[in-house]
Image (tube, rainbow, N blue to C red; front, side):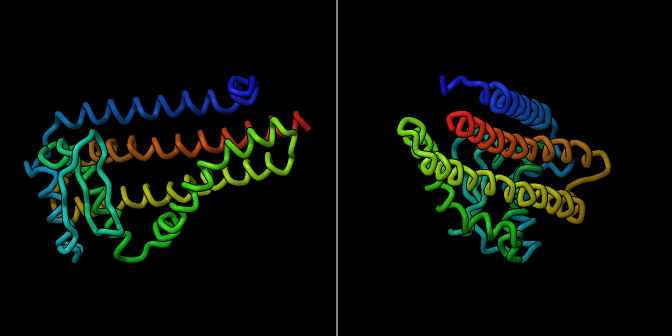
Length: 227
């Protein structure tokens, strides 16, 4: 069966287990550091607003949104969106996540190349990712090597996207920690908890990359065996 073949067991299943472990780590870190208050006592939106002003980005709006860990920066509208728990909380987790999103806003303002490339790839990757599996399956059932290769090629777009995402996320975390230290929000006792929260969140992107690569390897194995 295609949906539970040897390639799935060898490549995809271990990557998915790793992804579940990474998600468990970020959830555990969030639960721990959302109960630990920062020494500044300022909620996430105040931390974000201060860091934005300090970076010369006072025109970037901050919005409260629904969802859990749904925080993100929208470069098209220049809006930093924080989930309710992050927006209102004075916790270590809220401070770290808010600062991370400010890091993305700073990347956008300075023209950080990997972010620009990733943003440009979004519509292409959305199309290619949606088309990849249908093309591969049609090629599989019609015994068309061309369509199978095209499906693999399209899916590799997702791999490239994930690989570019890694430096974007790690750089945003580094900027976040630097900004928090320079601004005085983070003292010596807070550096490790903030770093732990940021590293746990970044690990989920590593897992996403591993899953994407595993899917490509699986499809390549299946194509070669059918040939």
